[in-house]
Length: 195
Length: 252
Image 1 (cartoon, chains in turn cyan, blue):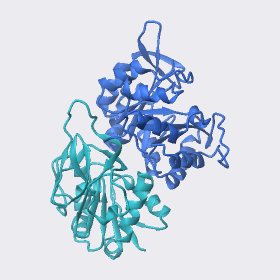
Image 2: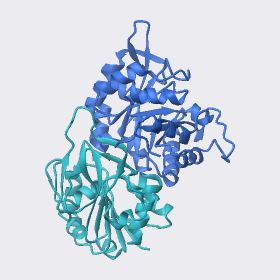
Image 3: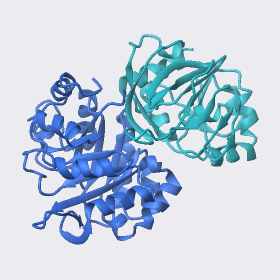
Image 4: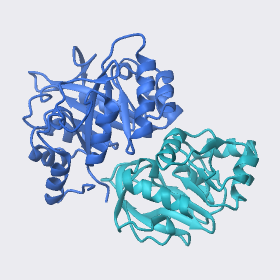
């Protein structure tokens, strides 16, 4: 299977590569437009800051390439947020694959921001979660979240309910890190590769 | 609901785990990768690899180790020990570490915390603080593995570190470390309530009830231990079931 990981100025690409290798897949990490377009599956990872990442993608024309991909695409964490319409993080216009907006958690006096750690996901409505029991634990690290919307296919509750995962046509996005979510994450990555 | 985290800490010297670890079903308990994999399979929520090597080759050894761990371990892990610069952190993150712990270097040069947060994001910057309660009742910061006292209180440094952009505080009580008499509930609760970032309590965990206490009375977001796990005095699955039964949010 030919899997491409989008190479850009965001961290954590190595961890995603290794997670796929543990599933028996050797991904190519690339910003080559042709290689991305030819891949069977594309993963758009990311840890970092939205406006810097978008600027990098825009400068290399990767913005239009990514949003026009036709094979299954999985955005992870910042990658998922960049597939949304807009991020409050430094007032950033994003790729508008998903209709949802990304906003900042607001302090409620008890919960810490950013959210760091294992939280449960539920209300699955995507093949990504095939075979998982409700309230599976996944690993999250984020201060911004995608609000609930028409593309929401799994929810999480932290301060308020929000989108743990989004899906629209061939585009999938997860706020958590499947590559760091133990066997639950491995199942989700395998489900994505099986799509 | 966000789970309370249980973290195992492995001390590393020259690429090998130290602190007489006693495991029957592990082929090479001195291999940090194999031991880390064992804990991950047992349900530990995170791992911390703390390098105590003191050589010039250290940075490269630690980076090589991070890469080996990242290849095998499917949960988050932190690397620390002598990390002193933006470049040190960059190398470790590029080699697959999820978070980096900084201790003495951050205290001596607080702007390092701000630089790291700006460059890599707060989420991967753990400020580790070794603290000791003195005769005057106050908790002070200690440096260089707890060997060098300072006149700065733990509370003031923790608040400063958080405001500079630290993503988490790893708080070790030197009074409690190694005693197995329980975590330092008072200073842990003080810090956890004073900062808006997660606090990892370390030092003193000896029974399962100590973990319940540090999550409830200590208001900790995570609890870290080393030898009680290494010597199997407490097994991770049993600990997690115990805490779940006590009404705490725990990932099983």
